[in-house]
Amino acid sequence: MSRKNEGLTFIEKKKHFSKSLLRDIFGTVFYCFAAILLSAVLVFAYGRKTTVIGGSMEPVLINGQEILIDRFLYGISNPKRGDVICFYPKGNEKSHIYVKRVVGLPNETLEIRGGNLYVDGVRLSDQEQYDLIDGTEDGTETYALGADEYFVLGDNRNNSEDSRNGNIGAVKKDTIIGKAWFRLKKEENGADLIK
Image (cartoon, rainbow, N blue to C red):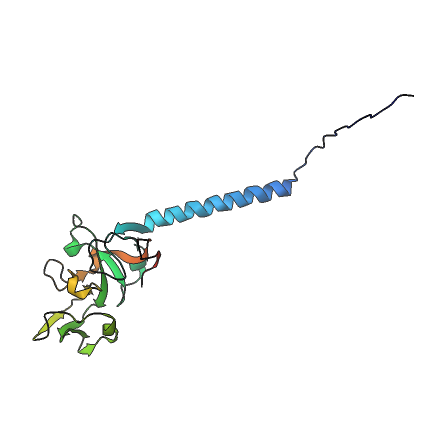
């Protein structure tokens, strides 16, 4: 009597991948790769990164903080009051990029009186969140904007070089790079959308 199959035997089973499983795997990999590629193209084509210089936008943005700029938005719309924009002063592309908040829109007249900002004679409602503007208690400063000009101020209004200064003045739309839309993490400031 012969003894077949004494001890352990190992039978190797062939693994079969169905065509539909392979198609699903490659489809998922392809769509992930396409999404990453599309995201990279959009960021490099329409986005830009810059660094905030100085403390004029504190506490929203601090010195040395990196931000992302949306260069696409203002190609299809105009800046709005309250937007934080990035621009070259007087269109000088050799200068660093300035980051300021839009407070005045085209064809408006702005007054700084008693430390407060007035647009076409009406005091802006958000003034309580900012310090009174120094140097205007005794007089009134008036600024008239043209058809494609914007008036910008830093949030830290008494420590800001902005539209009140002759070397910047009113910001023309064609010198605006885009909207500052996302801040990257820096010390106590977290990474989030810029408001």
